[in-house]
Image (tube, rainbow, N blue to C red; front, side, top):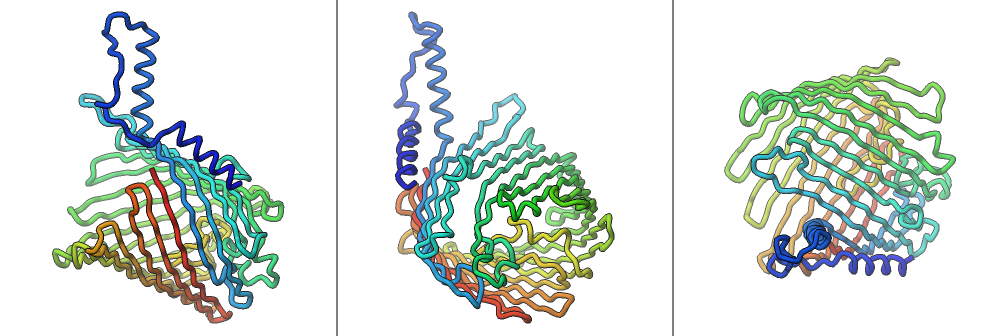
Amino acid sequence: MRLLCVIIFILFCIVFPWRKETLAQKTYMPSNVQGTTFLEEVKNNYNDFLYKERRNIHPYASYELEFDDNIFRTNDDKESDIISTYEIGVKYDFKPHPIEGRTRILSDLTFDVSGKIVRYAKHGNLNEDYIDRSLLGNISMNSTYFDRVDVYFNLRRDQRVAADLYPTARTAPTRASRERLVDYWTNSYGASYRIGPEVFTLVPAYDHYSIHYDNEEDKNDNYVRDSFSLTNYMKISPKTTLFIGGTYALAKYPKREDEEVNYIVYTAGGTHDFEFTPKIDGTATVSYTILDRERGNDRHGVTGELGLDYKFHPRLNFSFNASRTISDVADTFEERAKEPEQNIYIREGDYDVTSQFAVRDNASLSATYQPAIDKRLSVDGGLFYTNSEYDDGREIKTYGTNLGIRYEIKKWLYFIATYFFRKEDESDSEGYDNNIINLKLDARF
């Protein structure tokens, strides 16, 4: 498999060379030169097209070495391992320049395909081969038409350890249940359209999300959701925007009988940008949400969020974020812990989407520093804290820290080193702690 990746990478380099020629270095036969045939002119135009488009093709590759002292995220079966990850991919960016006197039809389009190989030094049964199992690793496209219509599409083939996907797997009685590999596809697409001026904008939108499991034991959790929304944004001042909207959604589990749910979400709130001092600015957001389900068990919630940025020095910046969500109902909609994108292991303050929460607090502080010794070096780090209090008396506290160093070896080659610590305390279980050290070499052309 490693040899196959190397061969593919070399062939790609041959077909799509990364050296960017200047227009002065390129010579084409002018179309008005006597003796130029029609076929030669077509060939010249085609070569010119390839040159222009080739600049938008960006191959990338990376090698990542990681030490994880708790791969199952549990306290009673704490297993460590060294994990190697190889990734190769290509990204295509199409960003045409606007032509004077013409309407810009397409603002930008991105096409990204990648594959990954993951190897565990001790736990070989956890090895993952995204390239072997599918030619498609990840395809995503985003485009903007007439500067008002946004369209997106994403299709991804993935494989994860059950302990990374499901909170219940972390506390499962057997290791087999924790380390079981889960194969699945995720697909999302949609569009939105901005109507009216900035001071009063209506945004109708459509969104689709689905997840399909390959494993027979998981197929009962296959899930599809389609939603239609309409949101009104009112800019009442240069720094204050109010919003009100509604979303109608239809969600179902195709493999289950009588598991189709219609619901409506109403949201209202506002955001305000402010500036304390020339060095400190921030944004405050407040929103109120009502979830009206067809089968009852409605949900009401209020969320307040504050974000601050402090430009302490041209080379040192701080960011602070805090939020609180209060919900009066002991049930979130449709077991969202079954949705991998809501529950995968995110290093900076991740959490499990668990039912029956009443109050949830979040706080994080991060900093970015660029030492004067070398402008190619940057350092960042932060602290995070989460506290969730549930209606049944349970309480989960999560806190930790992260530190990273990034160094630009070349304009296309980066070395990245990170350290991450996370600790989770639960009132009715032992919780767990986790240390991760990561070294990565990242090449992007």
